[in-house]
Length: 400
Image (cartoon, rainbow, N blue to C red; front, side, top):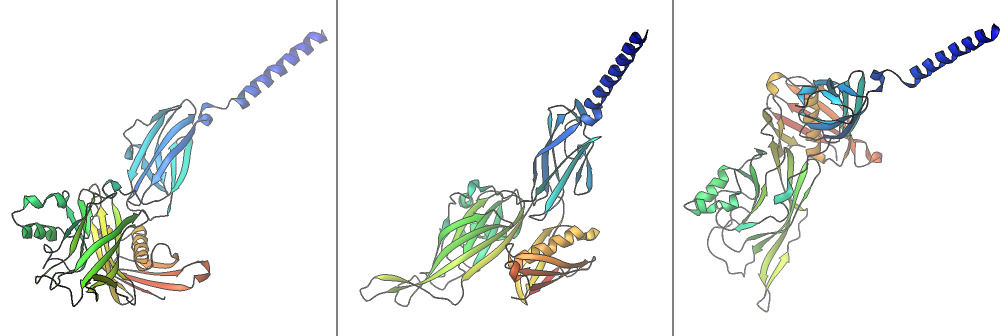
């Protein structure tokens, strides 16, 4: 009788062991859910997008998305059904407002009880460079007379103005149209043209010529020109008429963001040598001749108001700064940091190392202090900033 009892007991133990093995090796379905976040991107214009897939588990319901502690529902960024099946991939995208280049975005996708996580560094959106590869420069010596001062001017029109001149009765009407469309703030639906002008000159013989044009996809995006300008010497025969040597550079439509235009000038004087040949002699200057201009492109889908500040840098007037923000509903910490960061970059450039040591703000004023340097061993310089939100003026002082 003992043997059957022993066999029965052993059988019970084996059955229990098998049940336990099945339980531990095959956890409940909920624990099997696993999400993967891929193709995550975040750009300075505020666009955050990614793909999410269910890599483990039969199905789940995408509930919400958390971007740097801010919660969004799945429907905020996707028209796809929230139910996701194993092996299925769905896309999510939303604009959360301007982001600081180089900052970190942490993303968590929730499909309870599972979550998927990823992070990405904010980058400048790519420039639509299809029209930048070989710009069709248009030179003119007379149309800009009385209209454009020496420097860089930005023209925003509905289409390429270089193809519109035939639509005007007179040349002057055409150039008046260009002047009427001069701006430093535009939208991503406008055709952008850069006009480089030498300003009004008393006679002919003055020229402007683009030697090179390039763009850097940094933040802010930089358009860089190198030009040669020539003035007539005393022995050069010239026409006795007012001129304004200018060149139009059609760029095209640009993605939202800030753009810096820099122009490096090499200056020549045209003379006649003893043998009657014309000779261009470079003019040596104590400091490089650089023209600068700033352009801000807003999204037509962004209803946020733009605010432009006058900037005073070390007691001198500097280019204005325009931000896509509405100050009527009060200032947030993110907006305060955006204003201080862009002001620092305009003053010293984005390549300079910096540390924000102090930031105070209310709805009337922002004060900030940075420690900065050209490398880690040079981190001993101070930049002080005060932004008057009522007068819309930013004052920046820094040691050199």
